[in-house]
Amino acid sequence: MDPLVKNQNLTRTGAPKNAILERAEEVADSQVSNAWKMFPYAVLFLLLAGLFSSWMYITVVFKLKALSIPVVILLLIGVLFAVSVMALLVVFIRSYLSVLKTCKTLYFQDQMFSLVLEGGKDAIWDWDMETNRVYFSPQWNDMFGYRKTGMSDNPADWLALVHPDDVADFQQSLTLHLEKRNATFHSEHRVRTVSGDYKWVLDRGHAVWDKSGKVLRIAGSTSDISNVKEVEAVLQGKTEELERANEVVKQEKVKYEALLTSIGDGMIAVNQDGQIMVMNPQAGKMLGRNVSWSLGRFFTEVVALEQNGKEEPLALGDRPMVKTLVQGVRVETTSYLFKADGTKFPAAVTSAPIFLEERLIGAIVVFRDITHEKEVDKSKTEFVSLASHQLRTPLSAIRWYSEMLNSEKLGPLNEQQKSYMTEIYDSNRHMIELVNSLLNVSRIDLGTFAIEPVPTDFREIAESCLKELFVKIQENDMHVSTSFEDNIPKINADPKLIRIIFQNLLSNAIKYTKKGGQVSLSMTRDETSLYIKVSDTGVGIPVSVQDKMFTKLFRADNARIVESEGTGLGLYIVKAVVEKGGGKIWFDSVENKGTTFYVTMPLSGMQKLAGAKDLA
Image (cartoon, rainbow, N blue to C red; front, side, top):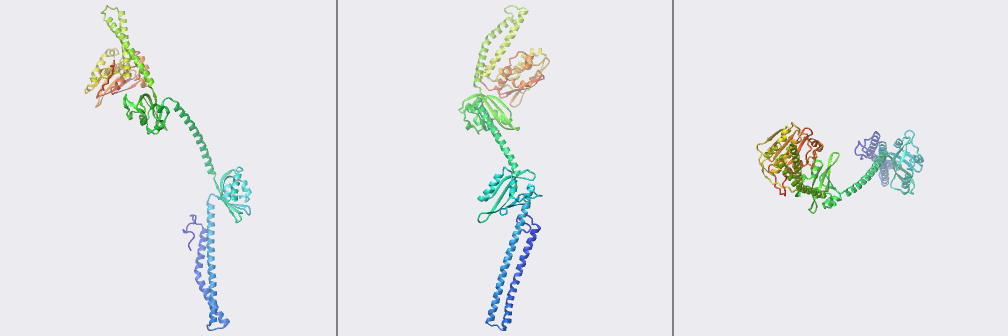
């Protein structure tokens, strides 16, 4: 006979057999085996016994010693009797084996069910409707603290333990199952423990009905779902928090959308790849672009900047947004932006990085149309240019007459008159320098100054400028040193512009260095550029104003104390000249210790620039 469980060491559930189950299986298998072994002997015994009984009956009752027809008939009757008894025995043995197998299976299932109950966390209850009594498993008593006293088998006592707020739902679920025969009885409710606390449980069960529809019993299980309910409560709280946070985000979104819509500047936000995430309507209007079309596209595809006044877009690496994404720095500049139709307008552009937990995630680019400011600035520049031109004629006349009077060609002057004439001459000279500076600035701003490059000796111009400053150097008892490499060639440049560079840098170094200080000038070169370096041990430039040194009309406070005279235009002019010539200028400075200016100019020289006027 095949065993009920293929693996002799495991039960149906996959758990190791216990001693009781092993003994039950052993007894059942041995009985079946012995029964089948004895069956042939029993058949032979019954057959012989039938023949012997028939023979004895014939010889004793009829006293016959020889076979005859009646004797044979009697023998056949005995054999039939023996076969009938044998058949009955076979039926008995088969029934015995079937009952034994069924008992074995039922016992095995009963043991398996007991193991499941003992090892599982769920509790079992069984409500007998005929006796109206409820059986509760030991696990049920343990779950609610009734191990010592035991739970009452009265259903009313069971119902009394259900939380008052849950009784109606519990009874409704039970009634629906019993009366409408729903698939299963299912109820989540709270049950009071011995300590008086309530515990969330899940009751599931199924009823048994007779043929008439009468409920015989309902049995089920009780699961402790307190932890599940705690998790649900936490999740509910988190859900409510998320809903509130979502509401706040929606309100903030509406507020920021209203803010972005109302501001007059164009604003574009890009991700770390340079794709446009947000674009306000004003930006679309200024650029002539559809906002919906622009979203998701690369910034460089939507916005193009002009390259240094040329009619072509700025190189990709020089664009403010690209610098911000690559370097993570704020960039401010002014440039011309191209519209979708190819026209352009001047704009002040600011690009700022967006950081999330110190990680760069994008940038915001804000640009403002400065056409009006440009027009106003142009008008002011033109006015300054006109006024300066008008002032140059009377100033030149004053200069000529003061020089004539100082020469005493028109008659001798006493000492007081000479002193007055010297003051007039010096003041006139300062006025002429101021007018020339204003004219230079206006020509730079208007873009009307010309560059006429010719082979130029930078060393010669530098030494000439130092000679012009010789008197000032002697008055302040300064030590001036120069260092020029021998292999510096002549470079195609405008000599007047190069002189402006040296005059401003050297005069500033001497002007803002105290008596006994040091000034040095050096020039070196490499394969592509000429390097000019002007150093001094003067008052230096405060860190707080270093970013303003190349702006118009700016002078540091410590410079005003040392030298009251000055226009604040010199470095602005120098920077414009250097950059127009394809070079760069920058400086290092420590307050009260000195300043060093650096200028680079390409050995390839300046590009010719047509203009109406030269710088004065």
